[in-house]
Image (cartoon, rainbow over all chains, first blue to last red; front, side, top):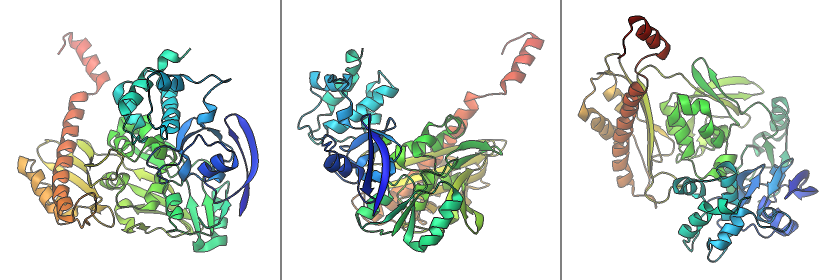
Length: 155
Length: 312
């Protein structure tokens, strides 16, 4: 069964018909080709599939595509503006905030949402916010450092 | 997931009509964070999802008769961030902050969480201890259900398939009341609890006797459990050091945990006793802290000070 939906992805309008049982993550990856968003645990625990809906982070593996009708979705592909990486992305590169990289899109999207709310978070605030973004390489120290120093790259 | 219809009614009348059309094959969906997992695992296979996301006016958090009314569609994030709840019932804001991760709390709703009825959830013990009631409505009218009579079994509540949770009402707390929710998490911070306990403790005017107490536990049975025998042991009794430990021991008789990767049944039972004691101690500390924070009503005090011309 299909349903018509209208929403925005990374600023672009999308008007489409989706199967009601299509998950948002599958719609983003397979129908729109936005493969930056990763699927890890599939049960909302690991954070690899984090995207923003109207600025708030959500779990795209537990969200039906039909549920984003009328909303504004930002994926990791939508963070750079005019080809320029956002401060969090620059900081992750500068301070080595990743190892294997599979969790990185989720980490970067989650950290971007954090900095939008709290531009200079301390370590505790970062840990509390990023608790649901798992890194199985356990590169947490560099991730925390990257987020803490991201404000250096803000204009 | 098997294919299903997805309806987006705009108001309650349309919700009721859609639920009638599909009968018990329909499922209400709000945030979807619990239901979608169950559908992916094929534990639930509705022929139609009736989304409440387009129904307006069901997410208000407001003061009512001194208590707090929380709309069924308020998200966990809205509860933990509500300035009203943080000011009046910080324990409840903390409880919702403990749920899973921020991504889940941005989507998961108060009503959806209660209807999901997983005994490992955080909010039910706190809400039961606070004496909350659920207001449910259907085409046949509305009813209020005390939360300690709401859960029937694992993932089962007293709600009919056509009933919608409109609001959760948390009554005004009596004077000299403290509240606490604690969660035993030996594994990770976003896990379900091994044992969780909530206590709401009221002292009498002299602050030497226990006027009232409500205790509820999570993760130690097929539903959240209210420890009524432990409450009875304390109610009306003088406040003394051993009393909380005795209540903890009594609470162990009320629980029926299962052995799993979060601990053996015997361990969870022991921890239930420990966490009830600690929750009571925290609730008492909460009363004492409140007393310190506001020794007397401010405006009256200022006037008296000025008239008499002396300070302290």
